Length: 409
Image 1 (cartoon, rainbow, N blue to C red):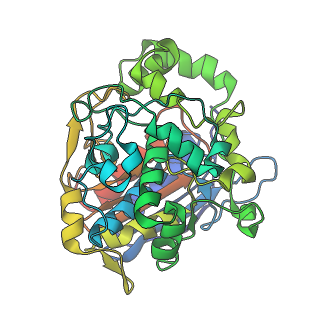
Image 2: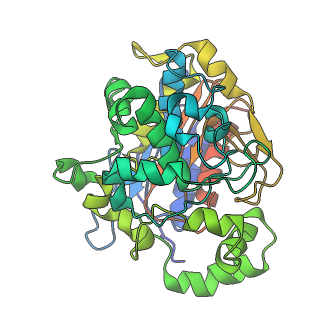
Image 3: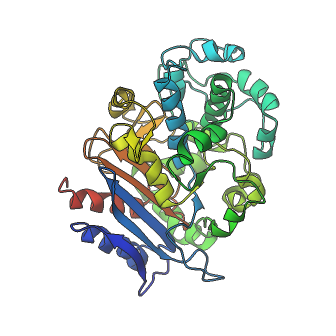
């Protein structure tokens, strides 16, 4: 992969965070970053605000602090935030069954699945019985019928496997059943707007914001054959094991989960760059945001639930999220140790945060948003060039540099 010989880093860091800036630059010079932003707050105050690179090589448009991009599964953390607010308001009890709120769900062995089990990837609902395309999501009643006919791949509650794609469909419909509006509409009114976060789930086709949205860039075919496949075939990491299960074992839980609908179609990952696709609410992968917007969504959660005069939830609602509610030493889909708390990821200590209290969500290829109430830290990282690994080394390096600045590492 080509690397930059030099790069102009725009923005500022607070005293003591100079190492974060150096690591951010190193991502461009040594690790192939193309365009990216990193934003972090500490106890509600901005400590990192960096951007660099270009939105795309063809035009050379600079990547600005308000440049947005699709953040893939970091979207799931925002949807989990929506459920957290419903919980705080007494509109949902995570330990009641999904069928309590969505009666039609109680079919095909799903009647005892709780909201908590569904959000924590323990329902076994990794694969749908019918092929769906993302365009089908514009007909929610038809999708709802397919979801209700889905059978669990294992006895619900007995094991954990990342519902890579299906999670968004089930969580989105459950949210609609409870709140009476879509999760994207709810977050816009209750989170994104009040917090002044430039984050959208369901970006209208004619919205001028599209001019500020960078295309995501999956790894190229030459990278696939010259670097990715050799590393994946002979590597001994969790990431390489996941990759082998995805491409080499078509009947594995990994392959079933990542190949299940709603499908992006023949364009695959490139499809999310289409404004018509971005206009569809995809609660598992479709949020469009800047790094600052992502960090703003998590900042209240890092400091008790209220920030800048906006109350998102009570401290006692956040406290259960700081504990691991579900853990597997080898998740059936991701083939690695990982945990969950009501839809928020609780990853290994060497990935995003060394603090067990931290929670959030990474996105395929690199992006991340999370909160750490133990330090008061909230962070958002958004980029355009994807890494083939689910947890990008660029993302990990930045997160670790922030914790070194805090004196935690």
